[in-house]
Image (cartoon, rainbow, N blue to C red; front, top):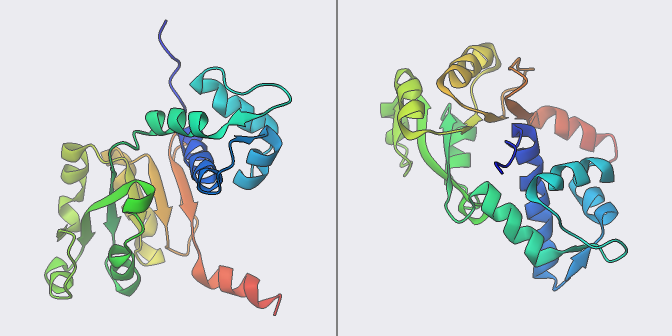
Length: 205
């Protein structure tokens, strides 16, 4: 019997559950309740159970989920045995800093290319990831079947670039552009507005 296709937003939440389970594993915790795992992931227990339902039957009432077994099942779905390719668009100061971040591979992601309007200038800054002109982005995405992108372009151009990413097949976007992006329901966008986050922190100081 063919397994149901897992929605993109469920895949995103499974990735969060996997990270939480890894932390539990590192602390030698063998089982976790649905309420505890849901709280750690920032979702309600009912949503967690619906998401995990795509994986099959896990957990025992009153005992919880086996941490290692559940993490392995999610890892198989996410394809974490292999690094997931990611592209970055907009290699200014922030974009360059993100490309130099060495934590992506630890979480199962590999920046495979970056795109900018002046790639020759970016290359001179010693970026190790291949940098191409933004015009080459759609064909690269299709050829390499990339599904994830990091967006770090000025707000004025963010929606235009997002449209190109979606049309080329990108299904998940992490945006550092300070603007609200419109995408189809099948595409997941997480926005990080650094100025807004700093403003929120300042309220508690």
